[in-house]
Structure formats: structure tokens, C-alpha cells
Amino acid sequence: MKFYESIAQYYDFIFDPEDSAECIDGLYLKSAPSKILDIGCATGSLACGLAELGHYVTGIDLDEKMIGIAAGKRDEKGLNAEFMSANMLDIAGIFEKNKFGAAVCVGNTIVHLDNAQNIRDFFVSVYEILKPGGIFIAQILNYDRIMSKKIEKLALIENDKIKFERYYDLDSEKHGGRIIFKTRLSVKENGAVIENEAPLYPAKKQEIFEALGAAGFAETGFYSDIDKTPFSVETSGPLAFSAKKP
Image (cartoon, rainbow, N blue to C red; front, top):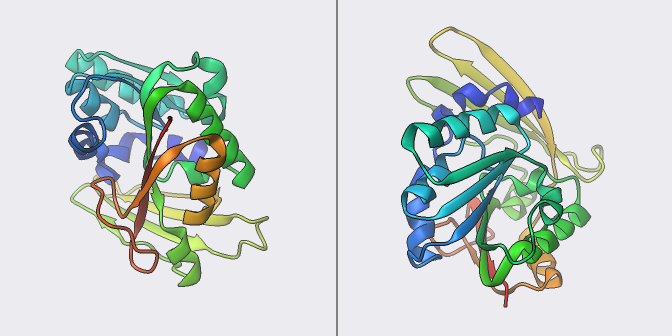
């Protein structure tokens, strides 16, 4: 995907999910070693963090440049992890059934799918590749809040390396049920400016809940973040959730 290929080398200055590894390990996995599939692994920070905690992690991402960076991190640290370029909708055909003890999909990855049916199909695939008792942990943004309050601009991300501006075109009727995510990345070292846009499907909490149930998941929980902070439709920025395969 051009969107992420163009910012791959700066991705770790924008997002740093590695801190989520200890949270996922302690709150969801109870520190028991597990085979984990990281779906939409980007540059591998979370996957490598989980591998450092003793898990065997397979990371997939559609963007080959991201996968190359992730593999470089693994090699540098000598970790037990595998990375491959793959479409998240294809996981049931790539991996055998009941292979993983956990699947994670963070970073608003799910809403890059085209529509509600794609999300339902994806959840079915995740269910198939999990072992009985396996857990699915995911995070998107709270689109109930974004759509109802017409939030067209997200918080600025800025540090000594980059400035990352994020906007939405919320006219979903014009875009076939999707919204348009627009970004402007300014690189401070060389003055480069990279502008991108991508369509997103603004999945809401009830849609997620129903799709998880239809796929067969149980014990679904919704949170304001991966750390299990209580969720509020009105005020939460992210929407994190977990569900188990019985």
C-alpha cells in the first residue's frame, strides 16, 4: 500500500506500539509463552516486544518495506520471530487451523478493510487460526464518537524528528460507506513533506460486537485502550477489544 510504503522509514517516529507488548503479555496472555500472529505488524515493534518476552511471533503486513524493517529488527536482536508480506483476509489459507494461541491486530488496521462484510470474513479467519481457548486482541479508533461528533482532525503527533497531521473527510455517502483518512508528514531533518490519503471503513462498536459473535467468539470485552481502561462511546479515543475462541 502506497500510503504506508511512503512513510515506512519514519513509522517508528510516529507510532511506538512496543510498550503494548508487556501489557498484552500480562493482561491477556498471563505471561504464558504462546504462538502469536500479529496482523498488520508494520515495522515489527510490537511483534519483537512480544518475542523478547518469550513468545513465538509471526508478523504479517501488506507492505513489503515495513516487513523488511521488521525483519531487520528481529535479526539485530536475535529474536524468535517470522515476518511475511500477506493480506489479512488470506490468513485462513496461509496458516493451518488451530495454530495460534493469540492473534493481535492493533494500530487501527481493521478499518482499512473495505466494508462490514470484509470485517466479518476477517473475524471468521482469525477464529479459524486460533486454538480453542485462544484470544483475539485488537484496537481501532472509536468511530461512534468520530462520526457522531464529526471529528475531522485528530491530535497532532510531533517530536524532534517529525510532525504528523491527520484529518478525515467524513462524507461516507460520497465514498460508498467509507471515510477518507488524510495525512501530512513533515520530516524535520530534510524538510520533506509526504501527503497521503486512504479510504477507511468506520466500524462502530455494535458492528464489531455482532461480527465477533457471528464468527463464534465469546467473552468479548471492550476497552478504551489495550490496558483495559473502561470504554465510553462518548469520550474514548480508541476502541480496544478482546474475544476468546471457546
